[in-house]
Image (cartoon, rainbow, N blue to C red):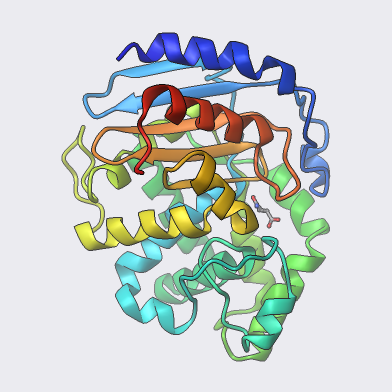
Length: 307
Ligand code: GLN
């Protein structure tokens, strides 16, 4: 298949949509990002990559990081992780408080904010130190993307902390239900640091290969997680990776995927490739508007959906 030609076509076809969507201005440090940007990368199992647009541009990975922290926590705690978080779609916005109250502080899944904050808490408890927990997530990301230069943008993390009332509320609510071990501020700060990690589409498409290949990185042959765990992470990405638009994403794209409010979306084609698309304009559910369209065009043109 001529992937490069398909990426070129997609890049042409999404142009009229680039002015649509809204950047994540609830994080002031992200409010000034230029909406008219687009990048898309795919990485195949032999390391071949195809790229279009600003694929060297670093952006805030935000909730894409939840895939990596969930991977770490699932590997450590196995099914006991589900004593504290669920694995069902929430059908609610990513930062909603309502469901968390009537479900007694147990977040629906690891990809909504409450769930990811809870996962971060579980990692802090395991490593007995917040910065150690963060460093472990960061070094995992560096390993799976084979990129040692990755860092977290302190300005973005601090900007989120200064305005993080809702995430603090989620953490406090979980704490009130005895479903958070550590101090809420420390947990939320660590979560923001992880969200503020910056990567480009090349690195992120590369980082998805362990999930596309049943837990083993096909380039380095390193096993990061077991095959059943990889299957489950993919399932949660498919059903929960786009919050209350997860059904829409499955319907239009048909791949396991995870979005972030920085405008990135990672996805993977099982047994074949990792994908990442980036465009900062978001739709109403906080997912990249152009990114979703580009992935829809990709699976339509290639026939490479899981359905
Ligand atoms: N750091 C962001 C927040 O907590 C992540 C949200 C997202 O990417 N959906 O609001």
